[in-house]
Length: 355
Picture (cartoon, rainbow, N blue to C red):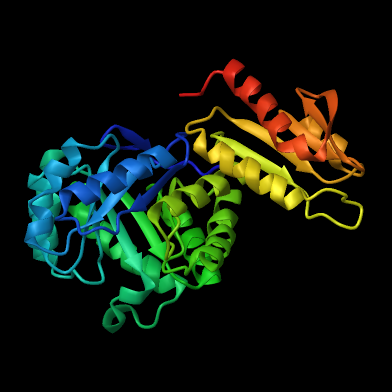
């Protein structure tokens, strides 16, 4: 059962409460390059991104935020570090959300200026605690308790100004530490929690670390939004994030491929078939939820194919096509992809997309 948090509005995106867990990412283009940043955000939108964050390292980047916002279709968050004046400018630019790091904007008077200005504009703030930038002079070495204390102290500053549109994140590279920090925070506050394993690595390693950490928390009902932090194109972060949600039945979106690991019983080149089906599906754009089984033999193949929306189970010299639980026809190995895609197209044509 999902933990209940208070609900906040981020540029029209509702976060917390009983709303779906959202997926976000961050651009890696120079924010001051408006055209490149907007183009990347459009690719993120097409991939299914719900909210996008941009780095604001200087005045030039801060000064173009409104121009970026005008050209995109999802809420825009400004990532602020070190300089409180950049936060004030981002607020003037009417961003939808601020991310502040209590580890490097530490002056309470400057934080009050930001909070009061954000409150006047109705702009939520994420308190983004990271193990790598924790104020160690105040909290010591990173531990779950130290991360949570940093967040709670910042919350106290914001609440003292009458501000409560708050999101919290407590990110580490260390997965067990991250999990324990979020568990602890979920017991102490009811603000929405932004999940993530920070600096999780390249695509393969980062996907695994993120799936373990984020997935464990979501399975316990903890978390309202997530970002998968990868050393990879931002679109890959969205793909992984959506797969994490789909694996826990927290999101229905696009296609899901069920495929077996293969063994000596498999008589067809199943990996090639599955990869080709995936490649073609990715080119089809925004699909309604569809589950596709690509199975290698008669052990689990027919059952999985029947349970999927569309499926194929390998035979000695080809495959058996299934759709909507019904066995349709046997096809030769050379035609497996074409026949399966034909059934997928028929299914998606007749099934309306969810909005």
